[in-house]
Structure formats: structure tokens, C-alpha cells
Length: 269
Image (cartoon, rainbow, N blue to C red; front, side, top):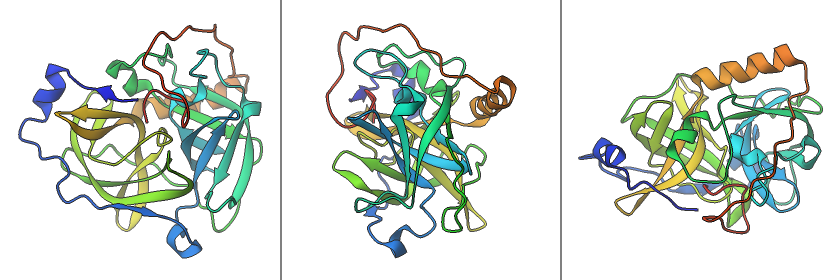
């Protein structure tokens, strides 16, 4: 699961950048009051053993990471019939439960089970639900512009060891950027893939990235986030243009190493 960033250009990016400064702890959203306003974030159940985190960005659209939609044991796409979105999942109940009608991943994303930083920039997917969620208590989130280095952001995620309720980290920071990739001080783990990274402006929380991977820099854990800008526009266009049939089976791929059982559908968080 560790995505060790022993890469010169990444380490250079963080020279002098403090890790973990002024970060808030994770807060479990265990009660209705705790979770108020966050129920558009939900757990994505993938088949019978895996999960990721997803976010409702329109009544029938869930944003997540592309690698969540691949079976880590075979490399094959997970069929929409095996995907369920549990909005606001906590204490064994969901504020809304929906299946998936279809799903599309970023056009340039190629899953082969290996851990490569280059794929993080394309690690984005949209899931169209089988029915829209139109509840006053579950309002889809808007998306926003990519934050800059040093900006405060937050994250809501499910993860291994906290899969029965989402947790909120109100304040973490953007430590740096590469093209299409944010490096963040946010706390993530197995199950956090696809989790929304929020920026709050004018009192409104907007999704500005999704969690793609957990990484290390000089022994410090960081999160890698995918830029929404170009991939999200392309995904929306694909939904409109193809009217379709986005689910295309891919050949099974034999994964050689670097995979762990349990938790989520990724080698990353």
C-alpha cells in the first residue's frame, strides 16, 4: 500500500516545506449532528470485499478515483452491478443507498496494478447511479479550482479501521504540486481512495481534488490528490456523448507484486 516517493524531483519539491504543521486531527462523523452537511460523501462498496470513498457532485453522479473500479486481483473492470454507493454511511445505515448504472474512467487512465506517480493525474472516475438522490439532507457538492501550495484544505473519508463512519479532517495543507497532482498533508489510508479534498471559500465547501494515493516523503506520510480540471470535464462530456455504454471489459492482468489483501481496491489508500 505504501507508495514510496523516493524520487528526486518530488523530494526537491518539498525542501523546506514542513510536514504536519497545524493539521487538525481526524474527527469521526458518528452522529447526525456531526455528519450534517457531509452526507453527500459516501462509502463505495465494490464487489463483496473492497470499498473506496465517493462524493455526490450531481443528483446522479458520484466522483471517485479510477483505480477503485478495477479488481486488484485480476485487473478487470468491476461491473456496475457490483458497485453500490452508500451516502452518509454510519452505524450500519446509509442516508441513501443506490446502485450504479454505468461508470467511466479518465480516457488516459490505464490500470496495470503497479504504483506509478504518472498515473495519479488521470486517476479519476464518474459513476452514474441507477437513480438520482434528491433528498434535502443530501446536497451534491460543487467542484472548485485547484488550490495553491500552502492552502488549507480538508478531507472526508472512509478507511480501514474506520469503515463504518466517515471521518473529517478539517485542516490539512497543500504541500506542493506536480502537473495534475497535489501533494497533501491529509491523513488517508486503505479505503480513502476517491475521497474528496475540499476547499472552503465564502463558507461553501467545494471539491477541488480526490485522493489517489498514500505516499511517503522522508518517512512522513502524505496524500496524493488528482486534479479535477481537465479529466472531470472530459468525463462529463463522455457521459453526454456516449449515452452509453461506458463499461468496457478489459483483459485480465496478472499483478506481480506490491498488493495487499483486505480494505480497499487499490495499492494506494
